[in-house]
Length: 112
Image 1 (cartoon, helix red, strand yellow):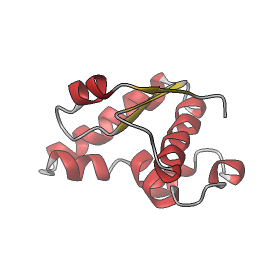
Image 2: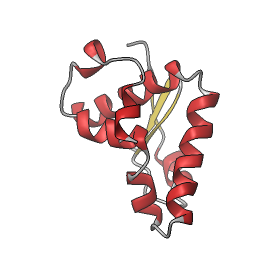
Image 3: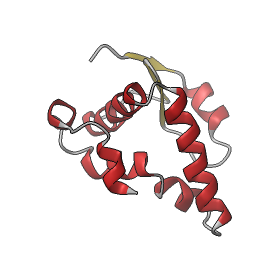
C-alpha cells in the first residue's frame, strides 16, 4: 500500500464529536492519534480500498447516508457507526492481515 500515515492526536480529538476517533482514513492518508497496531492499520487499509473503489465521493456520501439511516432509526451515535457496512467489513476482516490482497471488489455490500 502507498498510504501516508500521519500521527495527529489533536486532529483526531477534534473529529471526536460523535464517536471517539482513534484513526481515520482520508484517502490516501491514514490519520491516527498514536502509533497503530497491525490490526488497526489493516482496518484503515480496508477503508482505503473501499474509498478507492467508490471514487472517494461515493464512499463519503454513502458513509454519511448509512450513518444517518441508523440515527433516524433511533440508534446511538456508536451503534449507527457500527452499523455502517464499510465499518462492518473493516471490523470483521481487520484481523486478516492479507485480506486486501484477495478481497472481492465491493465486498462491503455483503454487510448491508
